[in-house]
Length: 102
Length: 203
Image 1 (spheres, one colour):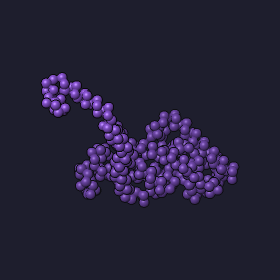
Image 2 (cartoon, chains in turn yellow, red; image 1 turned 90 degrees about the vertical axis):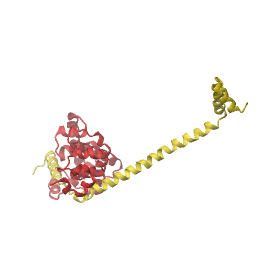
Image 3 (cartoon, chains in turn blue, red; image 1 turned 180 degrees about the vertical axis):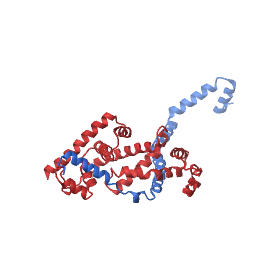
Image 4 (tube, chains in turn yellow, orange; image 1 turned 30 degrees about the horizontal axis):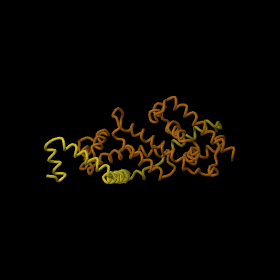
């Protein structure tokens, strides 16, 4: 009987190699389970992404709301429009239309 | 016998199955990438036994075995577009399997509870080797010792010593160089032996 630890380790490894586990009961309908999990992950990923993007869109909406209520933003945009409109005759009509003057 | 006769249900759902000869793995991959889930189910059916065989070397219980096998195929599905046709599909799947098993070992090592040492009465230098082999406990004894090893040591020992894969193949599967594989295998074997010796001294 060999008492060399190295050769004993080899024999142990060989014996472990020969002990092939029977996995047949797990293989039954395995593809069905995998496909079900894939479908689950797909729907979960859409749901997860929508939740991940929710704060971004919320922040965007808040920022847009705040910007539109800022007086400087309003004044700047109106002043720019007036300046642009006053360059030509059609533009003058636009100014009259916008300002309500005859 | 045609593929349609072999898999009448799949033949309806999967265009790749309706050919006279059974479709190749590559054809099924193409069909899957085209959105055909039935083609991927057929790939799973074809390769599940091999994946389960490999996963069984790493799993400690039935739950883990099923989890690893599912993880392999989920990863394969998600990375199918990375499959280059320079090697057979099963080689690519083997790499995915090894990668999933390695990740499993690393994750498991963080949460693992080591089995009590007293449960294993074993000494490499005496006849307990004979008793373990005779009682078909070799896997159990090795699994106990493996729990004390690092994830990469467990992986390399399983691939090189238990599955007896050539160094070159292990290098391809793990992405490590051949010399790295040799060094790691040597160190892992040394570490395994030391675990048995330490246990023998303690008991």
